[in-house]
Image: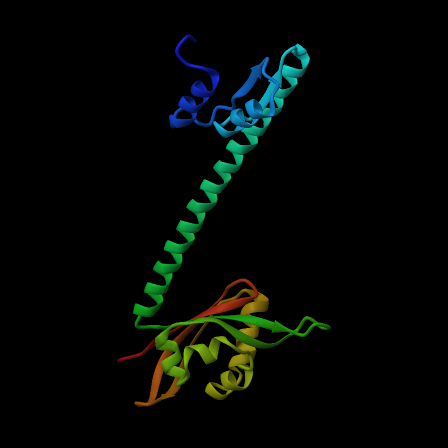
Length: 209
C-alpha cells in the first residue's frame, strides 16, 4: 500500500455503513503504546505485535467472531423488542379508543382471594370505560384504585356478587337483565359477564325498547 497505511484502511472501512461492523485486528511490528492507541482510536478491536504465533492469531479471530455474533444477536433482540413494544402500544391505543367510544358500559374485574382459603372475597376493577363509570356515578380513577366492590355489586342487584363468583369459578358466562338507578331514573339493562383470567369482563347495554 504505497499511498495508504493500515490506519487509513481501518478508518475507511469504519466510515462505510456496509463494512463498519467488520472487526479489524491490527498485526504490526510496531510495539509502541502510541501505535496501539492509534489503532484502537480508528476502530480496531485488537492489536497483535510481531513476531506472533499463528495459534494466537486464530484464537483472537475466533474470540472476535464470537463477540460479533453475540452483538448481532443482541441487535436482533433489541429490534424485535422495539417491534413488540410498538405493537403493544398500538394495540393499547386501539383498545383505549374502542373502550372510550363504545356506547356500552364495559369493565374488567379481578378476583381478590383470601390468602389462606383461596376463596374469592371481593373484586377490584382492572379497567372501566366512561359509560360504565357514569352508570355507577363514580369517577374511573376511584373505581380502578381500590377493591371493596362486594357491597356495591349486591346493592345494585341482590346476589350479583355471588353470581360473578360463579362466573370466575366455573367459567360459565352470565347473562342477566337488571334495573339500574341512574340520573335519568331507573333504567333497564342487559348484562353479560364472561370469565377473563382470574376475574371477568362485563358488558352492560341499555334496553331502549
